[in-house]
Image (cartoon, rainbow, N blue to C red; front, side):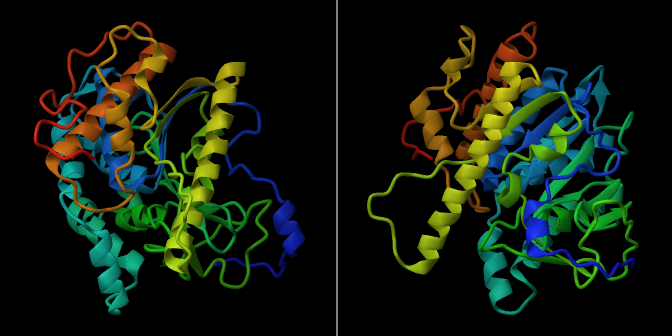
Length: 401
């Protein structure tokens, strides 16, 4: 493990700009398609699953160069990444997408993992974040590591799972090629388990955060700009939810891709004229306010770039009104019903099958509308939802979201 004696001052750390990692040019990207998947628990995981379903049918899944994800989005991205080399592409459409991607994600959505993680962690049976990683290992990823992901290039896109370093305050990236914090350094070809990478990305505070990785045996690469190289910075990584830094997963795709597709399954903070004063519930509300501000800033960055021509692409969100795309043949998605879906709690808690299907349908429908309105106008309209009987609205006798 390399180390240097320098230790930056607080001022130097605060004034340091965000940096590109090696191989990321400072000039605006000339090409490439990036997909960003936001956080939002199982709600976002299923919403993104619908978007991925539509992108596959539209022949855009195979065109992706980079998939950057945080939190709940990293669960869907992790399943897609691990399945990528098994996808049976006929032309540019994976014919076994449902079996390889949809069914494993929906299987996880049948299980509540946040409560058991908290209880087992509280009882001393491993940290809370480690228990969440164990659940991902059991239900989705087994002992697969980052080296089991597709090689970037002809084999598939680069998958980047984003967490936030509690030590440096910066973005920590997991990928097959490297894991890195630009202030600390880079580890090439990491063999960290995929379940741990996803658990770090989805370690939303304060319940599932932090996840700590032992890096004492890793070989570090030191490059210009690495100024946190001593102390515990390289012996362990203390990580929280990627959404603390960037809840759209935008940064890791923004610096490499000209076409940016953003799927936002994040919720919105409800107004409250009498907020709770006890510290646990007050803390949750303040964290929600911070999350909303981070998300809004990133969204404005993307929309402004689309409008001034710096980037191509499209944004779609779980709170989007499908009528805003002005497509006469968009799938029916009444705003009252989609708003109810957006209000599904940000949990890793089991969801009933009809609700799972409505979330998937909504992600599919709004992704389709955004892509046809702003990216691929020649794309034929879909004939139906993935789950036609479920639609978007609750059925008779069924509770809402």
